[in-house]
Image 1 (tube, rainbow, N blue to C red):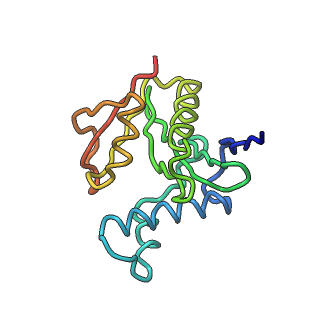
Image 2 (cartoon, helix red, strand yellow; image 1 turned 90 degrees about the vertical axis):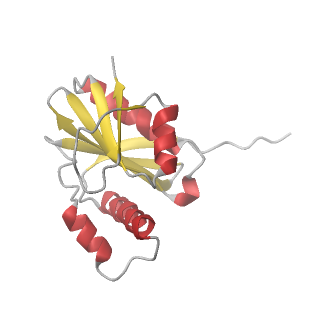
Length: 164
């Protein structure tokens, strides 16, 4: 009888400008652009979106970016922005070929651990209506919809999870 060893998830902090992190953030934004417009991204459109919504604050002292590997594969990311007493979750992304393997749950557990260690008492996030998989992931992991706390152009649903 043979058994297959499933790859494990390893999640570590990275600066947003590090090559692997920058690659994941570009892939994340490409997917956001494509899904929002329901068409392929046009030349320059992803660069514009990255400039409109930068991730450079996902580093000390303003936040943290976590990069996930599934086995040896670069597989996903999630970021936190520190707010007074709480943390804002952003940039949750798992590459398509790694979806369904527990990466979203692993990233949420890692960001929650980071937020607790930093003294945050809750995590909040906003998301779009078309990101149904993300909204389902958050709900499965104890995030509940709350009234709007932000007014970004793409914020349509707001969630919160107490950490204590």
